Image 1 (cartoon, rainbow, N blue to C red):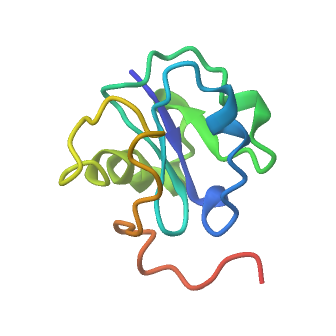
Image 2: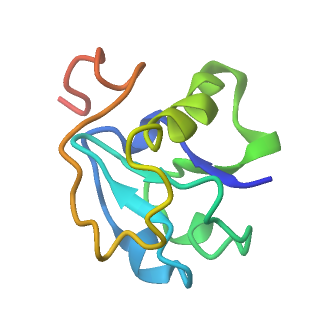
Length: 106
């Protein structure tokens, strides 16, 4: 099991969760942040600091955002498991359904 970042993060990119993550498994995409499912240790430190309540335990992702569980996996298809977001930096890409969304919060 892992934590998942869902739609409320799109175009927000607060990054407070990145600062709290003890294993550096939250990566920055073009429009939102993604949690690496194989690097996450399920500590939950990221969830309470998210100002838009976008982070959920995998089993608790609301049905309307169920596709975001797979999106957090798909984001790493080409990237693999680099073992830490800090050394990778921003990855200027997003996957579906994020890539097709209109600008959020406007």
